[in-house]
Image 1 (cartoon, rainbow, N blue to C red):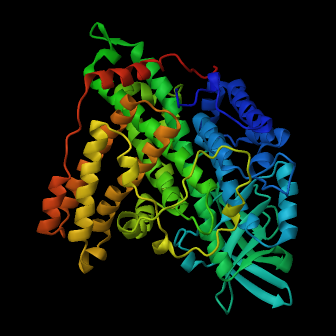
Image 2 (image 1 turned 135 degrees about the horizontal axis):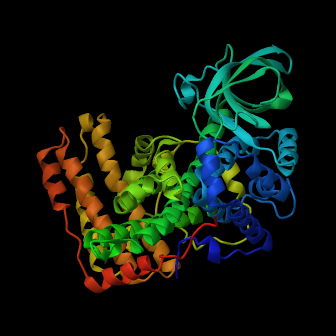
Image 3 (image 1 turned 120 degrees about the horizontal axis):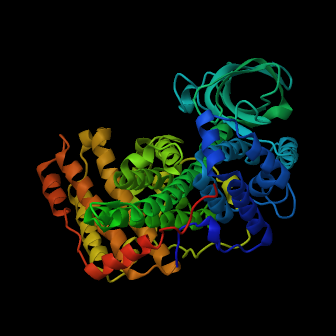
Length: 565
């Protein structure tokens, strides 16, 4: 089975016709547009009105972004099909993904609200083709929600004014509703309210980025509000901000997967049909190695992200494992996307700069994703809170199957208080590592057990716990364990062959060794920690047949997809 998206042979399973219809029509829109026009718009920084007209005409966002009960019968918040949609948009261009992604963020506080009037209005606006925005970050302090300077001042019973500025707000030029975060004057209590970007008291100051996206700075000056515009107050507003990011950050990994997949087709086709020194470029051993590594990393990205989606769909107040896996899609999958593009670029070299290549766009876009919705180090600092229970307190948890059924993922809009991460329990990761009798999986499992020994016998001391640089290095090792676990779980579900699984673990063994060296070299690492770090360094097992099998899969991508001209 070929797990990578190929729009010319699109055969992913959908349990209903409307989902299939949305994906098919989205692909058709871009293929009709063609690569030449796609790249011309990219270079000219053209606002993607044609895409938004398509979204309106086909009711795409209405179908994908309206929870069950508020729109048409085929509308629901379905993470399974959202994965595919995000991947397709990323495949053709991050700019198209972006206007959808920031709409998702803007919709989060609305669908989490108890304000039924705004929710019904939002459903109507989606049906009319509207886009939305998430007014959280500010110029002086980014997305630090403790420090918001957007102030809502009560005037009399049920009436308020809002004043302040927001910065780096996608869709802020045309959003029908901007879900805006602030605080009440006097009490300092947090608040989310619905603003309209077309209101006379809403000033769209500028697009802060030179791109097709409109990443706005906007200002409100005595913007009038009533109780009907208020989405959340107090602790609920705080929770809505964080829980919305929980939903939205997951999509960044899928954009990376789409970008890398398109770039992979283009790079393999170019390299395999180019001759240097009387031989194909793909005959050079170092080129083969880079392509095999890039392919294995890309398949691993998709396996992990799909599996994390299963846990999001299975989530409940009793099962919050998704809160570890979700930021992993954001930080690990997106940073792996950068590595994939770097490997491909080292092969195609100067070709990757040419204006007619999709790759030129991919090389620009892939950099942004690890830096959105919290940078990588912020997400690593988040996931280390899960480490004690993950390694030392496993419990029996319900087994989560592949979740591709027609279902509305209602829990995502009622996640509850955004706290208690250190109390979440996990199933034993060692079961997944023991489920494959492959040399590199075994080597990786041995590395992990040494890391676990270090955490138990030589854990970070009090000073190291305050040393973010030290903790980030340990967090990278932890992230690799979680990454490997879900990849193995999904390799079983999707029937991925042992050759490809072991090739994936070839790079995981190497990456684990790399981060072990980094932890060893930190200024504050102790002699015992250094000794154990050296034990974590292993060399993956090379196996000719396995490598050749994966290489054959890479070569099969030659000419397998080319975007319409």
